[in-house]
Image (cartoon, rainbow over all chains, first blue to last red; front, side, top):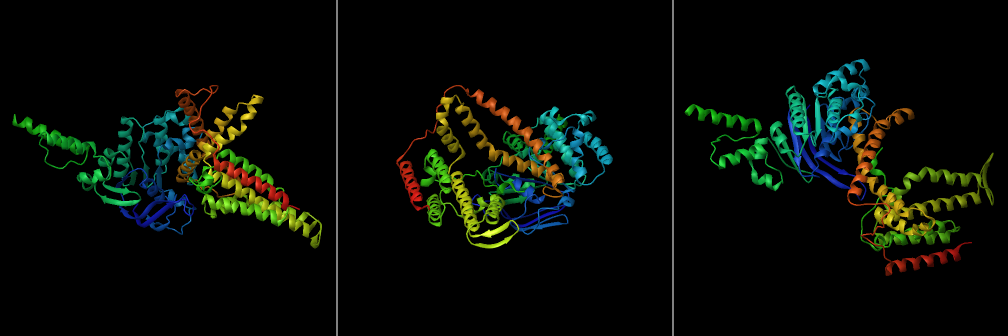
Length: 288
Length: 266
């Protein structure tokens, strides 16, 4: 699903003295099938962008297009069910949204709202649990009996069950253990390769560098830069200015170069770093 | 449903004279003012009370639109009460009647008085909450309740409960907003369908909210205990309440107001 923002502004609590501008004149494009990351400081408007895409917020000015769905300041926030059926939104600490007695009931909550038959929804629930790597026996458990990480997986499954074409991720792996983090990020990456568009808000520069093909940098509600990970992460003084950390793979490559390890190509993520180091060792071996 | 719109209990930070008044003074004056509105039975006394409020709002530098917003949630109650007064009270000149319903001079008069009373009460309480931070409000209240210790009421515990609940109102509102968004994204339409469907659609909000609140209460208790909080121990305060010159002046002005109302009323 392609997304276009044209001169979008948004303020929270408009027309009250508490009014704060969250986005100012923001324009960007997210191509269909891309994995786009939105980064920036706390309060830069990242989460606001996600909520605007899903129609949870209505723009104050400007125009938003998401797939065939259009929105501007005059749009009504209701009757968006048909659109949201195709959009999955995984919120920060999404495990807090579970409310049903059993995992199964929670999983089929979304599909039922979107008018899917209960039998089909239950069948889907069984499948989706496998995707997030939880045993089928969990279906009849209460969400309250699960650990935080397991509940997060159930919450993610409850979104994936509707098979959305667009996935909005707000810090999806925050607070998970490293193993689960990688596993879930790989899951998203797989879904992206299957053609789903993914928009992710994250502070984790390693994930941003490893998975995304486009990065949008926000600063105090304005677009600071839109570009590929190479473009964004190659300019160190810019990163420092935006208070963004260098991804550890790029940093590691830099340190290696400094001590004389021959890396010639520019490294943009963990995979490339590993490949490059391996290549160098193989060259060394061949020499001997 | 829009959580952001709720203004009750909102605090607008500021440094004006009204903001800096002792919360006890503000609480007592607010209560006394509400009491006073019941004695204002003619236009002169009501005018004076309104003048007092405008004066305070001016000093507090708060936009007037805020106070009108405060009226909105009470609108139906006000209309209902005023209509009761107008339609059922008889006396004086009779303008119109139909069965039990009458519109008379007395009815209209008392309808207007009741309306003004509502507006005054809402304005003064809005002013109190807009200019006093929840912590200060709780501090003031517990200080005022202190004499009840004599009757073995656990005032310290009550005031702690009060302070905590006020403190967590914005947190809970935030969280409700987040959970609502999460369920909306899963296809819930709030505020649609008949009343039973609307009530049903609240279940996915309330249950996660309850769970989160209980968890938070538990964590809060642990955090307080680990920092040495004991209910029975005598607590000292970082910000101690102290009467200043301004507070005495405010009290004095209010005493004048009481006397003025006493002389102005019928």
